[in-house]
Length: 309
Image (cartoon, rainbow, N blue to C red):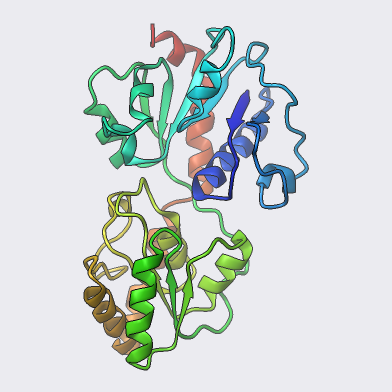
């Protein structure tokens, strides 16, 4: 199976494709390979490079039995003199934006593929798009965290604002003016360092893009024992239960500030109850379940592809 990646910077989307690459490697009879588009980052921030995977030198899908594409990777096929060789295409869908006719990913839904939605909400949105070619399957999202992380002391508020830095800066200013101990993350960090920052925080404020397909950082914070504050971004509805396992204020800075104050003022029993609910919710998203579901699809890939015709 040949994967195509245009790896300009680490992201949750690239991380999830890396997980699928590993799932393929774990299934007997399947061999994953990867090609990186020109300009891709080939340093230790790239999980394939960090793991010692040797990428393909040339982009030639023809010898491969199966192609694995995501997002705008279809453009890689269009750049070939003979785009596509008729082999099965697995197309991972990680965002709600694919269903938006104004998004550049939307037209690719007309291409024949076995589509893998990482969130049932995404599958529902794609199913409403007229003319989608090929089976649409929902694969449960798997959460992958290093063992032992999150067991140390924690204190203060962490605002994760990589995707919404302006809002993050306004919130941090208001919190500091109110005497709250708070740290701002508005730049990309290595994943291990980001998780360490989350694990050392009592309260995690997540500021995603307004529309996300899943948004892993909030679920990671729940798994690592934080009280999580995160507005609704669409994809997080599958795991956030407002007031039960997390706080879900609106997007205005004063709403976010008040939610942080509420989290900080919780009595111990209430905070412990929310953390327990959050941990149980995160445990529902296991990497084993994701791998088993994907392996079942791979074992049936020829039949699924034949159903596209």
